[in-house]
Image (cartoon, rainbow, N blue to C red; front, side, top):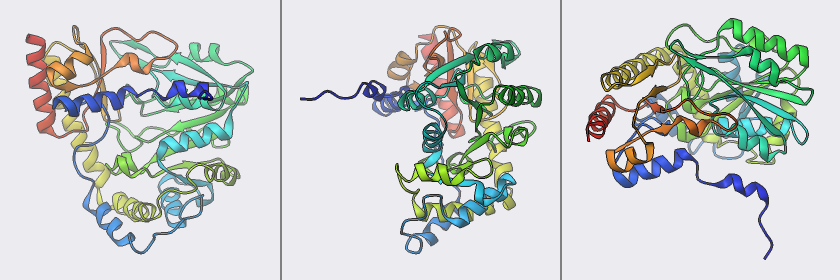
Length: 372
């Protein structure tokens, strides 16, 4: 029997799937995997009902024109720059296939979202992790460490702001440093902005506004519209290269689900004009504050996020595996987000995209677990 390819070593169950499986098995409150426990907005579901039975066949690989127009309107760009994908994960893989390969290096910041390294390896490139620093002030970019990581083989840099898992947001100064470095060494920039509407202070600056000629912006309807299972994502490309990205995308899933594309196209307009994003941020901020205050009461050091629906906390004596199986709460140990450097000790990532009742119950269970 022939052997499987070595890349199947990347196919082990992810920590997120494992924790969600254990949470279901043990009846735990799932603050691990980042999916909302509340339903999507009615205006999105109503749009989907109108689309099903009307928009049911293949769309062009580049995406439905209506959705490309809606995304372009939101991002202040042209529809000709937009490629629609099956979620942001596929968007990132389409860019990996487009931008780098054997002999190239891809830089990303650690703690790093889990898909970046496997996708880099799958296209034959080398992953280079640059660690963020952690202090009482929170998570910070070490620009000198980033400069040292750049080599003649650097082909692209992934920037994730707002940042999963830390919840941090890169400042204008930091983004300008990144843009200048990319121009100096002539590499691509991939800006993963799936949490662009989930911020709790000023709106984050988009990297594309500083280096539009070399920045690919990735977005997600799942994060914007509280519907992570819909798998509708997009790429905003520099001028003139969207057809090539769409051409590679056609050999994977060909196109994203057409009726869901149509529903999202309609819903993005509603979300933009109805105050939905403002209400969503307010709701998440309240849940974040509940979780952060409860964790501090339990003795945790909490690093307040500036965006996303995750926070990081240092909590002594908590083993994530025991917590889900014995304490009834699922979280993600932060070392799951490190590949080339050591994680700060006793750090956890917790998702607050759950109901207030679930968060309060998780805190009660965590208190009992720590007292046991």
